[in-house]
Image (cartoon, rainbow, N blue to C red; front, top):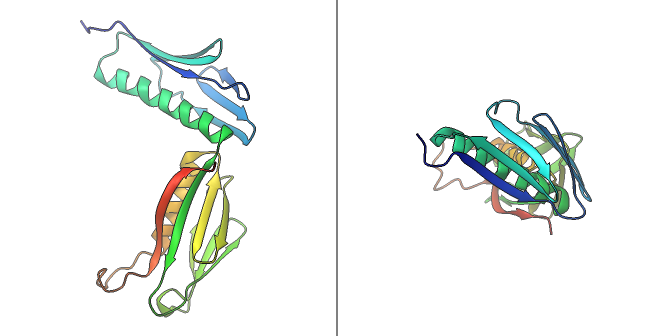
Length: 182
């Protein structure tokens, strides 16, 4: 028999945020936008709004179910931070010899002249994320932390060097700062 019968995590809702729970689907709306997420894979977890907080709870939770309860609460907390402050990742364009050109076209980031290559390298922008290039910085912003993080990872991954010594060829685009947009 587990020590704790009920595992309960509460996430406070700020005044300017609206949380709608439809079964296991959570929709968070705020001043910066709207994020929705489906937690239907978590059958043993209850999610409901109680006043000015979201409650995530499970009963007779063993280790794995307890971890899932805490994870869902953290996801909801990240959604609330996303619609109030937003998320921003900063990437630095590093090159030694060939000047790299980075452009944003539609839902793609195009990296030209990387290591003197003729063919451009392309990174996909995921979801509703804004990407802009300022001198030697690439700034990725959005309300969904997963979309922002995946877009930044796609840009970093597009400039991965294979077959050469990483200590000598340090060219690339690297994440150097993660945080909220405010």
